[in-house]
Image (cartoon, rainbow, N blue to C red; front, side, top):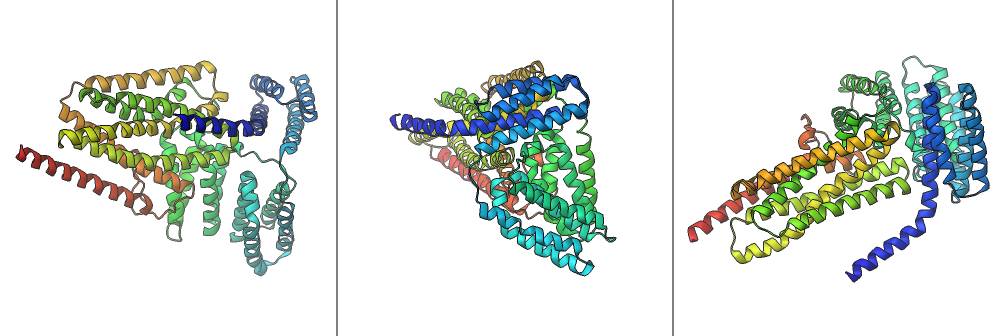
Length: 559
């Protein structure tokens, strides 16, 4: 206990030193989000929504630490309030001025950067200058030169600004597409080069690119851009654009997942496979698939707010499986008179608290893009550990009916730790993601709808859990253990596939597709990296079951 308290104190001291700077960045992030929402209200000519965003901006601005930059922000905000009933063009100009003031504040908090590495990026302008004046025979060579020179310099951009890095990569994709056109368009070529130069200049000058601005329209644009590249027979450009899509997907997936879970699953499953399988033979089929996905995502752009049902379904989707496992474990501990129930509930509560802490850390300490990738990787690695513990618990469930009393006690002691870990991980894996979804949804729905949806989901999941426990303890002990074992092994199989797929989406694992259809609801994604481990786990489960059955038969003969 003493060592635990020391560790907790150390964590507290570390966090206390980081929170002021991280908190300041989080507050400017919130201002940028509110400014973006206000701009959207201006575009929609919705004065009611605009009024709400201005009120939010006023509240957020007051929370800033006193400084000259804060005074400028408050002055710009005062002007915005005075022009609230003016023309939308005037309001738009006021929002731009406010955004500039926020950028100035953020620049004062930015640490010194490597000026040499930034200056080397400006050398790329010499290449783009030559590309503008090149003839047909020189363009391809210079394009490869630009790509090579960018690759040698890109690390500083990638490490310091994911937003700028994405913009540069999109510009390179546009250059490839323009180069690959059967009928060359000089205007398109120059615009793509302008896009590249502007992105480089923006980074060097220290402009702020907020990755939180990844919207459905941005994702759709990337799919359309990849499709255009394939129409132009530019496979490299399409691959680059789809890679950018996958990198930006975690930052925008919440808008899809909360509105259409089936489409979310389809996009997350299909796009990596389309990229991995892309070649000359699959080009036409890939174009069709990308156009279908783009059209499906386009149908979601009309929904600008969330409802009570959306809020309820988020928690039901994310929490039902976890609570089902926990309820089944509680039922079998009660039925078998084991002492593991409190460990299960303690693990669930601790998992919920830990996921809440993780959500806060992600929200305050990381940019949206890095946070989304990090969240996916945490879910992936945590899931792999959960699978190991689930296999151990499954083995324990079989052991309960086929070992001696002394061994039973040893395994029971082991099981309490295992039950705690399973309970903790099943809640922790999805808890932080669920909370972050609600953070993203909150500005687009009323507090009543959000709170009501969460409450309804809690009641529904609670009723299911109570029913599982109530009927579970009334089953014969052998059937209950068998049912719990099957459930644990099924979830281990699914979580293994989902976790490996999450690591593929974030680039930790490669993707080598197999000619099989995906089945997302059981965690089956047809790639070598996911299927081989699942087959191995399946074999382990089969061998475990056969060994326990053989051992049980031997014990019966001895008795």
